[in-house]
Image 1: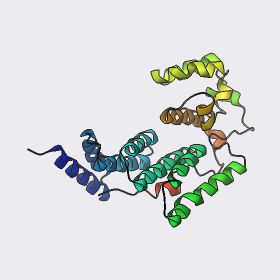
Image 2 (image 1 turned 45 degrees about the vertical axis):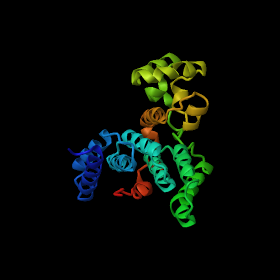
Image 3 (image 1 turned 90 degrees about the vertical axis):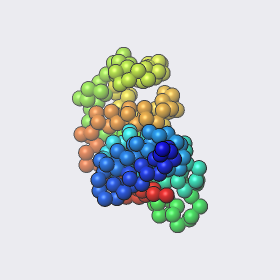
Image 4 (image 1 turned 180 degrees about the vertical axis):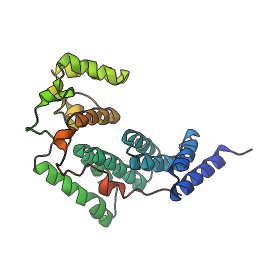
Length: 246
């Protein structure tokens, strides 16, 4: 009889091996099989981390963030945790949410003891983000005054329309309807919200919910963001995915 511990190791190694040979489909399949065992050990965290990397490469950002967040709850080694924060920052960068990216990077900085690694992988990017902030970037969704919000359906909603929009996403989002309505958030205001405002002013503490809302806002304003050169692709961050074998 094969124990769950043996299955865990075998599934992890198969996922890693297939990933290294370029068979992403099989790699995801075996990582998922190991994760389903729910052993919550370091191999489990490794599989979550590796599967998150696959999702990031496939631009499945919500799934990647969910896996990285779960891995953070299992890892105890500071280096492993720092790399999870780095990859969460990569997701935020890919989506153009720079304030969220900055917050994830700062969490990682507090865990890294190697000065060179901090300089190479954290401070350089943090400096870029600070430059963006000083140049007038909102750190979340850029506001282009040249584009009128009336031409954008999402940005043209009434306060009641925003309530309907929140309700239409998923039942869990109905919890925010009252705070949005109390603050008079119509479509025009919605399209100017930043990550920090969603948390501090409207109580959207769930990171995945903020990712979804900011993604919708970004889509509504995608035309006004084209050619801004803010580097919203995964870029430098996604290059530092470290597949975990042991």
